[in-house]
Length: 183
Image (cartoon, one colour):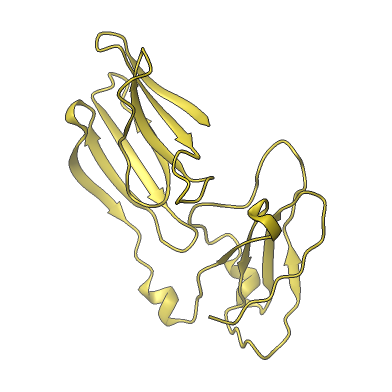
């Protein structure tokens, strides 16, 4: 699925775009950057790193910034030269050892029956798999889009620090139960 056309190089007859669902071995919601020729040949993945990518091109198309992350891996940002797809400079890399040392746990990604629906659970800061916790649901069951995050976020830290678990589910109108081993 083409998500966005970033840049069109008319002289080289190439299109730079963002798409998802190209590789059945990775999360079908993750977006990657690609280049393809006008005639549909020469498709090339410009952003092979595992994660959800966001690409921003310079106005002249000579450079682009690639920012990627997952729900459990902090963002990395690279400046790339479009010609040759060469890395120019590592701009930033999120580092999370302090939150991990303080007890923060990354969200738990899960799929429901048939892998049709996707969900993320943000565990409470003091998670004990033998205790019960109040759950805050952040669910939108609209058919037109998905709302479960695929990138790193600290949006629910205040709630998890208070002992809540936060569940985010892209639903198809059904209720599910999720069991987690506490890993």
